[in-house]
Image (cartoon, rainbow, N blue to C red; front, side):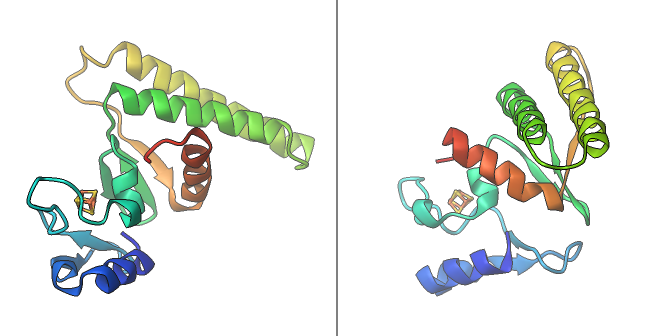
Length: 153
Ligand code: SF4
């Protein structure tokens, strides 16, 4: 989670937030040690309305790798990320960037859509699933997409 999110959780419940540690791989990120201390007595999130972005991204599994967030989603996650790629293509198509840059980006995201389609087809037969890398600079776009679909609420 991000530092701002740690501050929010600390302000809500300082004791429970004590279970959050710095991520040694990514200095600007923080990790909740399992089991999450914000789970309440009936197994529900104590801070659901203010939960970190990473929690709202379920069903994705998030791994940090320095400059990207790796996603190893279930089939539903693949459908979401495929739709995200299609949404980006639509967004780029109507943007005012140069035609050359636009076609390059559309081609790149079209390849992503095709690879996600393939991964979905082979989901139950492959021993190792593709881990999709979302660069940090694209996370805001992903967040906008999820908000536009009301996913993760
Ligand atoms: S959604 Fe789950 S992991 Fe996230 S803060 Fe709530 S209880 Fe913890």
